[in-house]
Image (cartoon, rainbow, N blue to C red; front, side, top):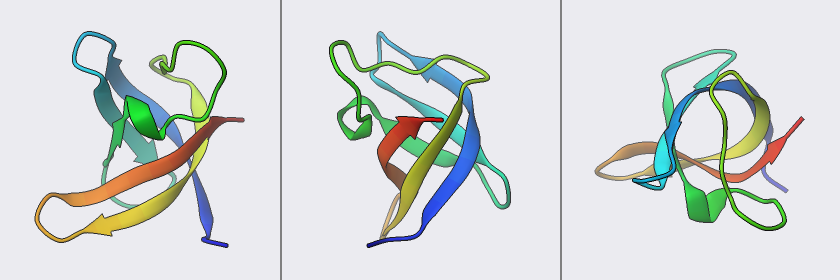
Length: 70
C-alpha cells in the first residue's frame, strides 16, 4: 500500500474538475475530481483537510490520487 499524505485543499474548481492540495510538506499537488473517493458528487472545498496518495507524473509533476476527507 502506498504512503498516505495529509494536506489542505488550496482551491478546487467544480467547473474545471480539478484543483490543488497544499501538503503538510512540499509543493502543491494537483488533484482531479476522478481521484476523489466519496459517494455522490465528487468535490472538495477550500480549507478541507484531506489525505491522499502521491503519484509522480513524468511531465506534469505530482498528482494526488485516492483523495479522502479526514
